[in-house]
Image (cartoon, rainbow, N blue to C red; front, side, top):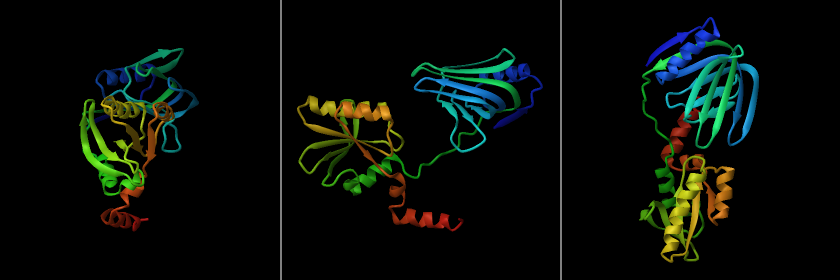
Amino acid sequence: MDVGVVIPETLEEARAHIAEALERRSWITIAALCKAWYEGRGASEATLGDRIVMVKPDGSIIVHGHRGFKPLNWQPETSAITVAIENSMLVLRALRRTPREILVLECSSVYAILIALNPEEGQFWMYVSEEEVREAIISDPSIVEEGLKIIDVEKPVEPGFVDLYARDKNGNIVVIEIKRVKAGEDAVKQLLSYVEAFRAKGIRARGILVAPSITENALKLLYLYNLEFKHVDLKKLYLSSAKRRARFKQLTDYI
């Protein structure tokens, strides 16, 4: 990765470096004194304070304060980012069209800018993947529901492939969609499309979305379509095998 650090003497100099870096789709980290406003799925405001702002090559933006690990503001894969000098402030605007969101940063001082080109992607492994969650449910269907029996895996239906095709203790067909991250509205719509495919063939089917958590809007949509949600504890699944418990024990030796 090619890295350069700029200590701008003026806001105009900072603007020019940031604008060029945005054009080159660089990985940009900015240390600045700024305010932040956000409007979209909700609304928020951060008053003037020292922030670390990160703009990734895909347009994602993260704004951090000096405490905690959670960002104050964030926006995934923006549609457009602009930077300008307005009223003696450096103003960074990030617009996302779908869903419509806007994040505005007003910086009175820019302390430093780190610009990185050609980052090495590297590899990433999840300790519990969707496939592992699926295998755990196959081994112990009671994770989802007592009396559940798995009939098929990756069963093809017209819209795609059902993660798990099962039957409950009352003989009803159960369609299970698995997510290892917080489930959103797209996951609900995906599950609904599978359930409706079976119902169109005259097969009475229940739909269960299995995930570690779910957004409020997704949960409302789930209940609207008479579908179900089952929380799955990823940490519990991770510690469930002897091998993983041994690995965890080794890690605790350092604590």
